[in-house]
Image (cartoon, rainbow, N blue to C red; front, side, top):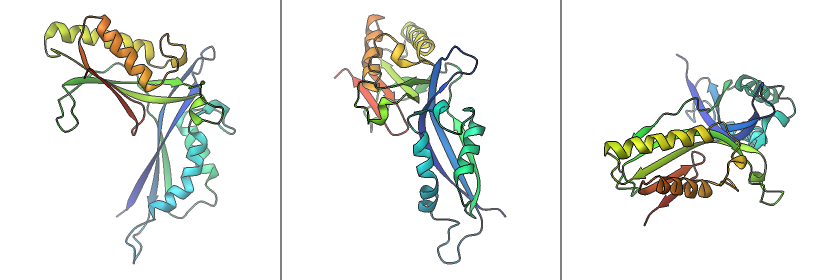
Length: 235
């Protein structure tokens, strides 16, 4: 029997698109730290999750809100190279450390998801999709981390009146597909109307696009990370 525990870390970063003319994109990244071994005879765990955090958190913070191509030691920004970069810097290597996984939470196509109403969260019937992009809030002070070029994997939710009506649904799907095409793998600072490209600005921008298309929005939500979310409502 092999016992393993996994602790996940997230960071938000930008990268240059290989083979492009210095084009920039970005996304969220997940780092899974895998610990293996036998449970401690007294404490019952393989390792204290606090010890995993102490070992990895400083390295992950070094990558967070960065342009990965500019990080010393990252010859390329593929997840396997980031994994090797992390493993090389955990010295001495803890006995409990089995491996590290790095996942770039990229988005390769437009996929619309139906979400039912949630009374507890005061959310209507709505649809959602994801996109990944780079951005920099360059209006912020020089020492603010969000001023740096970085990236996110965004979740967008949109609710409109008469969502289940076929004509309304078709118009909404077409509009959101166009939005995905404009934003996915983009540098959001270069998108007209999104300066500075905060999730608040993005929610307002999409709300107005829905209204201009003759749709009647009742919710637009932009989730920037797994912990941060902005909602725009009509009330």
